[in-house]
Length: 284
Image (cartoon, rainbow, N blue to C red; front, top):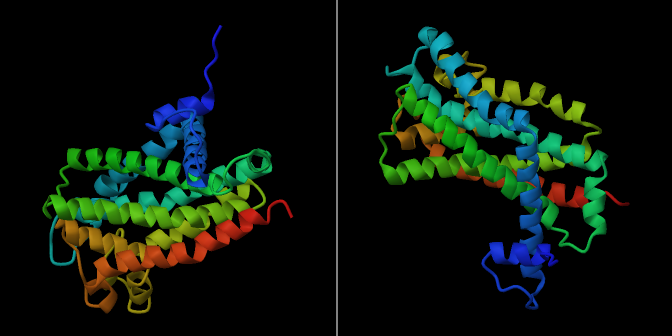
């Protein structure tokens, strides 16, 4: 009876020649893919978890679009559901960091991360694999949410290039928040504490341009909403999608596309090193 070498299987799956000698970069890619594969297999074996991850955005769209939407006003006029959808895309990306934190803290407390660290694998594979897996899940979330949006009448009038750029900015926001989730998962004591992050992300999404334009908020609250990193992504995607409610009176709203790049890069520059440093300190 013949057995299949798992390393050779991964090599073949990546289009590489099995059995040859490779450097550190090669093994970093292979180990990263193994972590990604493990994460995706966990989703397949826990269908309720994936149903929650993919079903929550749909329920949110139906709730805010049809239940609360009739009472909402869009500055300058326009359909509220078209105003809402870019906000829902960004909200879904923002809430995803809670799943990252919960998964990381669970792996740490169950000793999974220690097992990874004891194996002859690239040290970067644990964090990069987590990031790649979360981006793949984010792509699935955006796809399902976009199909739902089209079904309720939302459209993108910005053209193919602008539409692709808008979804790219949404994934950039998710990429930045992945490292916030990884760092939080390495710092928090248990999964229950990770669930409490809802108390942080919920006000952050509410005090933004997701559901209401900052110009309609009280004067003392509007600047905080306008300078919210989530607001920059929301306003930028509205502009790129050609949806109502894009732009505003403040500088940050008028330069939303620029800030939709700046904020995620700044968040990544802060939390990626923090996450790597915390990961390196786990065994100390």
